[in-house]
Length: 371
Image (cartoon, rainbow, N blue to C red):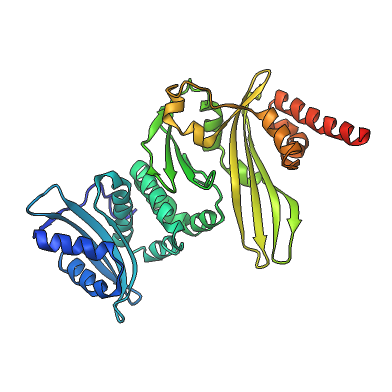
């Protein structure tokens, strides 16, 4: 353990003129403003230190004329060339998660963990912007636990994010990007309920809320948080097609129920693209939270992290008939692998879903024979 979790930043009051100069210099990446930004942030710095020829500087200021106006930021610049290598700022109360990210990086700098900082910030634009939001969300809810986790796993975290794969810890999960827009943060609380929060590529961070134990999605969500490592262990890649520069695979994975009656499960379906260098990425990912009795309903992870849906405020059930969805993929999309996977690993799934998979598969074979 290093420095204690940083819950607040100290706000330094500065003249109104300098406040707006600093805000403009932070916002505008024109080269001629770089020297001004470095000069101002050094003048009003909260904390600064050097590492490997680079300068890490943090600032948190407020306008002494209108004290409600605040700005916090962080830059890394090359000491010899004065070139700014990274910058991020907070100047809007709606962006509190950015403030959490700044507190996270400040804490790591005070611990002299610049290896961690530089690795986390190695993700290129524009993907880094959403990664910053995820880290800010995580630090807001996990505090020191996220610090300890990153110090042990920071390289793995970055590799998983680059691949768009699940990131998980003892009691939390960051889902891969769903529908080219959403990531979801899930955290199991001490009373067993689940905190959920969506992060959107276009809309930013949605409010966090609690999924209670009586929610229709609680059991499969709980499986996802408690046994996320199963998605690594149970992943199967089915070759789909290969070209001159890359191969595409249908990726299927699952988390089986720990309930003897197997009333719920988690099913992940994605496309994995691997290039000639061996680098790969998951796209078009869906995570189905499945709950079964005589029929199987599935809920998208994005729906499950939608507070209006959970509270019943939408006036509709966002669940889909998973059997019908698998049939649609099988016949229309020619994506047969999820059905084959369910049959091959039938002990992981509710009986109603396995029966439906057999029905889809057998009907297709009968149709092929008839035709």
